[in-house]
Structures are given as C-alpha cells and as structure tokens.
Amino acid sequence: MANVLIVDDSRTSRRILREILEDAGHTIVGEGVDGEDGYLKYKGLKPELVTMDITMPKLDGIEALQLIKKADAKAKVIMITAAGQKEKMIQAIKYGAAEFISKPYEAEEVLQVIDSVLQG
Image (tube, rainbow, N blue to C red):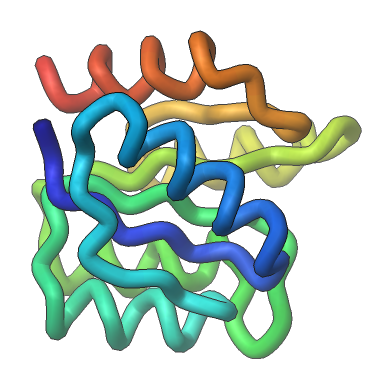
C-alpha cells in the first residue's frame, strides 16, 4: 500500500477520497487545500503518490503538477478532473500526469487507477 497526498480545495472531495483510499489500506500522509499548499506538502512529505485536483485557487493543479515534476521527475501524480476539462487533461498529460480520475468518485475506478499507477 502507498503513502498518498491528497490535494483538493474541496473538503468534501478530500474526505471522500481519504475514505476510499484508507478503506483499501493506503495511508494518507497529508492533505493540501490548494496547488501551492500541495506542492509545499509534497516537498516536505515525499509521498509515493499524489492525487491533484485541476481547478484550485492560488496555483491550479496543472501549475502544481509542473512544480512537483520539476522537483522530482519520478513523482506519480494522478489528476482529478470534473466534466468538461478536456483541454486541461491534455495539458496535464504534457506535463507528466500519470493518470486521471473523474469526479464524482467511483471507489472501484479510483482504486483501479491508483493500483495501475503504483505498479508502474
């Protein structure tokens, strides 16, 4: 199981994701409330995996992804997308996102994507 950092400006989204991951045996090492907070926590906590919402204040998920990948090229970042964010998804792939999970969360899909990213 992995040490995971959840970055999302929605407290509800963080709570749902935390429940899904902890129920599956993963450890949540921290939560970021915006892209800047997520980047700083990544540097301090060095999680094995990050879930990163795309739309957030201060730094959005794409900007935070770029900073994390610059600091650690091997970082595994899964982007969280809402409907209608195709353009942002294309950008995220370009900047090194490992995979995508769509809101609203389906526990099975979340765990499948995370397992696939962790297995490389």
